Length: 237
Image (cartoon, rainbow, N blue to C red; front, side, top):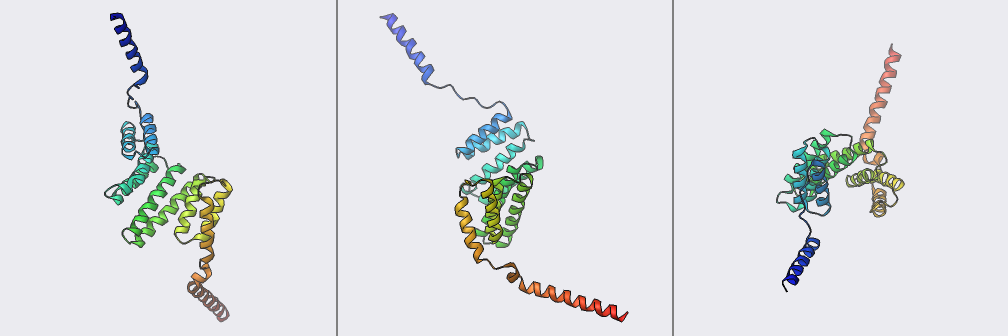
């Protein structure tokens, strides 16, 4: 009887070994913490992801990817915080730090542009400050152009540039950028619908020569007047 009890206990112990997983240990280096942050970000666990990226940075403050990861997770988390604009500014600070460490990263520039877009959107939609919003929208476009200058075949950079141009009322240029995405990656997510919308909006845009008709006429008058003055002076002498 006693031997049967011993055997039963041993079987239960063996079962526990296989059924109960071992405790997961923390990463041991910055690369491990960075990978953990990526996994948590993908899972939508932003608080945990932020902690992991901070751990990676504490071990290597020059880890540009960890700074970019922190910027990304703060940008994603901003709608769920008590002060979204403050969170976005923290994201921008982290992104600036990442780019200061490595300005040749196209993904980091794309992330930078996305943060700038969200800041501009907050100023426009929450604070009704279109003037400040436009400043951030223009900086956003510059960021996507930087990404493209580094990686001309980056479909994500071109897509975001196209989206930014349309948002700024420059859909004719946006259509061309969306068409570039189509060349690089015809199956890019949401491309077809955005391209069609951009084409419709571009068709209603005021042509540049009409939009700036007054300025063009004034410049033409100045040029003609200068030409007549020059001819008159030459004849006089």
